[in-house]
Image 1 (tube, rainbow, N blue to C red):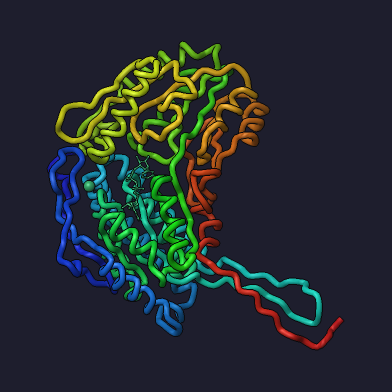
Image 2: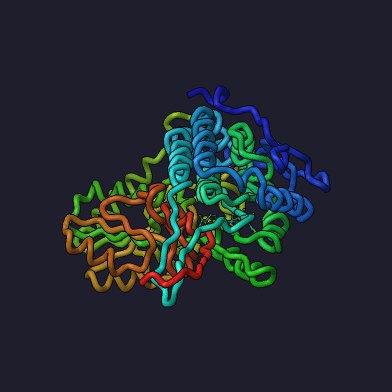
Length: 492
Ligand code: NAI
Ligand code: MG
């Protein structure tokens, strides 16, 4: 794979409202950077409150009674979603290249992971357009009582930079299947694929105003969207800190519904009956995939005492072998972190680990000054009260902790404010299920990790979030339930 051949042309840099690309009202722009070099890829129209107001108005008009979108048959919505999936599939190489250029993840991962994943999410929700149901209720009195599911209205969607197009699909899929209209604000670090997807949505035939994309910063465009009185729901993925703000924005404005998918400090527990090489590989991928920039990263690796030393040695060897570099080189396994802020946070946490007495087995430093690369890092002898065992690092830093018994590891795994995911590696089915049922987390993986699929719910306990994405559960979050009770002559 030649580097130059992969660098895509940037076609879309403006705000997308009513199926048109427009400048921002204030004519401002912001640069999106290539994290492999730190250089500007393109200047993007910077949306602010004024632009959000226009976009929300467009979405409101598109949602109005008797609009083309409201009158559209569910089977027609299904066709549009499938058409969008087709177009994304046809443009896979272009989208994968844009994603890697903007975010820094290896091109081959975008190509065989992210983009096909996006297509399957859209196809799944295409199938759900006419498969959500009301009920009839055996109520007291002479009534026929039914419930009906209706789209919640205009939704605001605010997404992060770690899986830019994937997060868009998780938000657009259920919102469109439910018949909502939307305004999406992509992360300021990675606006390019969202704008490309906007162009494809127009080509697919979505009526104007149904899908709007306003790039910009969080405190300006993001806050305006989450505070908007005409937005009925906000769906957010990102940090816990900003998740809190979403709830307060809702309280300050119109009590819009809020769904949150936030951070984690997910435990992965390795019992001593395993094939150590296999377990080391699962635990390695659980943490290092997407350079550790993964909300469900297995960032607390608990290993049973009997195999601890062997595990630490092999985990360190594997991390040392990892190829870090240009995302467009075929053999690259880890590209740059997303930006300077991210590097600062990761290095600060690595330094805290050393200071607090964890053993640095490998890595620990930034690589060079160009771009935002960090050495794959492994700590052993990590204790529960160290910052690296408590805080979300969001970087390629594996923390390995030692445990002795099941009861002990369950208590320690649950001793966190987060609860997004967990994993257990063992050949003993009793151990696997005892742990899976006791751990307070939204997803549990047994002898695998990161097994997220479009069909099944994903989301967090405790401070990892509110609500579930993917599966039928996500659709439910974009629907209201209306009860209709009709008087009927007594037929009993
Ligand atoms: P962030 O939470 O600040 O950003 C996520 C999105 O929220 C972006 O689109 C951003 O523009 C928007 N945003 C920021 N401030 C806002 C505000 N006041 N009002 C409305 N929208 C706002 O996350 P950031 O700064 O990119 O990363 C910081 C840390 O958050 C990471 O190191 C990681 O620990 C965590 N994180 C977790 C993610 C997850 O998948 N759960 C994704 C990204 C970050
Ligand atoms: Mg970028």
